[in-house]
Length: 164
Length: 102
Image (cartoon, rainbow over all chains, first blue to last red; front, side, top):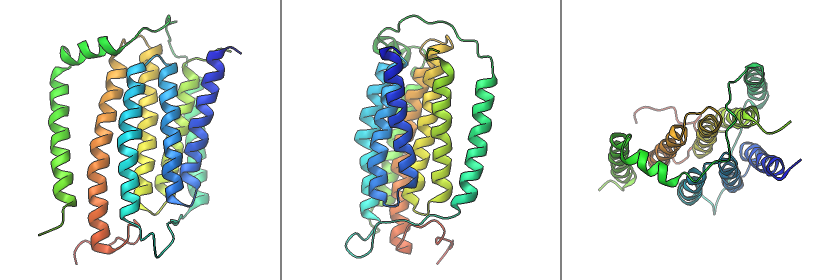
């Protein structure tokens, strides 16, 4: 077992274990913190796949942005001082049965398929090439995403504002 | 057996299933959002894995970047809606919010 395999299994274990705790722990604050480890593990998997820029963006946007936003959502929508932050869960047994069946079916389909993979060499740094793609071939998508983010920002601010 | 495409696809499958489980079983709306984030991450792992092993160049990684941007916009809008729901109903349990008009 070389270093790459060891790192892969390490990041896979971090990702899947913390994702399991995210959906099973009763306290929603703990769920949010386990989500942090899940995002870290996914970023490690991106690095192992040779996607360094995507990994950094994952860390910045997910851990620095979305997770903080989710924590704000938890704090603002629970009366921390009066009631407990635990959340209810329902229909655990049928849900786990359905999910296990579905996941097993997918895994069987994936491992049974003969994927045509190319034996790729050691990946190189991707940031410069991604920037060229964004500015040349995908520039329309890039600008549209900018407009979309602006609209989402204005919409979220006007939705969450107090009605005057 | 060396690490190949199947390993990454299996990880993304398990992550996707856990996200579905979280969405279906939890009552709190913010927990439903966390399940959605897990599912988006699983899809992203698929994009990047196929970009690495499928020979499509960098386009898969670009799609993963677009998904991350859309996830950020989605989280902001969804949390604004959740805050409004909390102001109206005084809780965010998705099974108790069953009124369209007050």
